[in-house]
Length: 119
Ligand code: AMP
Ligand code: ZN
Image (cartoon, rainbow, N blue to C red; front, side, top):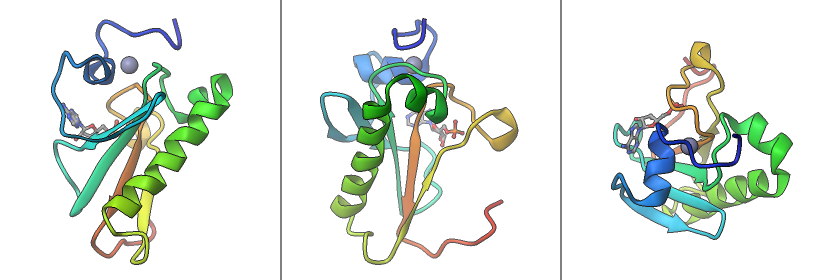
């Protein structure tokens, strides 16, 4: 059920500690950790502790937690000192858009120039 830990979900296992991750920030509602396959000098994932399949589903079910994820993305950027140079928050939604883990997550990417349009 949405919001409940899912036994086969990689990010639920990171939340529970079953799978290790390089955690950089934690709050009551979120966990932020370094992406295992970084695409920029800073590449951190911010996830809600609650399981929801994607960002829009999270926002519909738990709007305050969706706001927590975005606030934490900004806090990660500040910690990483990329606020001034700019950073990108990416919410891949659906396999066709490159989503591979179906537990909502925000990518925080920075520390290099970003192209537009994104690939
Ligand atoms: P997405 O493709 O938007 O679903 O993003 C999933 C991200 O999770 C990818 O950037 C992966 O590199 C990352 N990832 C997969 N497994 C792990 C892991 N064990 N620890 C940290 N990041 C991971
Ligand atoms: Zn999950």
